Length: 593
Image 1: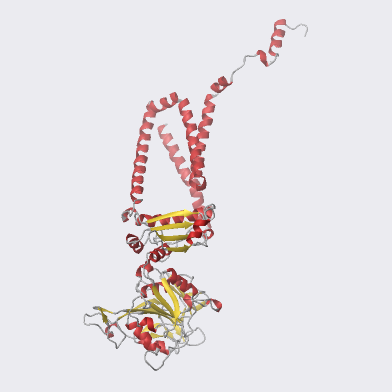
Image 2: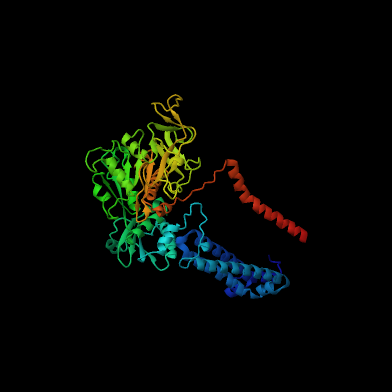
């Protein structure tokens, strides 16, 4: 240490002094020296923020505003980098290679702009009042997003403007989803009704007084109000937790018919012969409560009565008093025969039909002969045993018939069965015709007195079981196929002369179904059982438009794959397309190289 050079020792001491002897660099100079790294960080942060905002905006609709602001922040960061590096940007854009890129960008931007503009114009046109049909086309198989032609016609003929008030809480995810579905449905009504249909949303918790004013005690609900007459009708919706489609076209259309004072037709369930009850559920869900409620939702006045009770209405000269339809839901005893003028129930029922009344008969196997005698006048006979079908049934009971469109069991076409794809009939009997078309009498103009149409049939592998065991006995049982429901359009029974009123023939519609249980409370909601009965009533009373606006079922189409097929879809999606793009990129690079 003693022999060390003094200059070296001095330099060592200077280098070991504290940092304050060194030259300091300011924060601004440090940022400037690392500006390139900061730019890269801002670009990455800007692009990341923009895409995160897009994902939030698309997938988390409750945070739409947050998604928008996140996208704005991302674009702002990218813009800051662009302004700070304007020379590099200008060089990249206006250089030789940049010009090619700018040309491509201009073409892409122009294409996207034209596409967006065209889409906006079409959206604007379709959002106008009553847009042309070609602008709004529902391409779903069951037309679940559009309105039926009958509803559109009703909206164009409204005598009183309609306001729909929706009472629904939307502070939950289920409520918000239900409101979006309801808003889409009501928007379709609003478009088709021009300026005669409005709707609004009310939170029943935040505004309980409004709900009380309308008499709403159960939510979700829609109050349909005629704004001039102040008539109202309340539609109670489903539970949003069970799905967002809590209201349907049928309910809203029926409510509009009510508030516009479209005349309610009277439908009577006949009593006095052991028929099913519509006022309270019988033991083991055998009642017809659900059937009655469905008819009420279709704007009918529904009640029960005996044929004797209906005498004043049947022979009334007022169209408002005349019953639109009578329903015999599984009579257990026969029509009463009595002496005296209009005391015989068979004669009362016949006179009712001669005056234009319609009847729906629902029978169990081997009904009382008095019904067979009456409907025999219209070319129809009733079976005695129950039907067995070994091809189309609800397992494991072969006498639990399954009538499906895929088996062509609803041929020939008929308005009643047109919207039906499957119904179930436990323990049905057959309905047969006893007269051929050539034997039916005709009017002077050639119109037949009777038109009989089969509505539903069994398959070829069926028979009428007359014994106790559901096994075919060639000596005792009768082979199928069999008709289990028939629609009759009649001018008069066989042997009677058609009546003419105001220059037109009096017509009656009759529907005869060989089962009663299918429309009971136990099975009413199974498949399309309920629709089948209600459609029959609609057709019988000539309310054909109500058949076409029956509630639409959203189809669930599931893709079923095996394990190997699922693995192929997964790995091809993950690796196939990226691999192809990589190969094409390498091949293009190699050629240019």
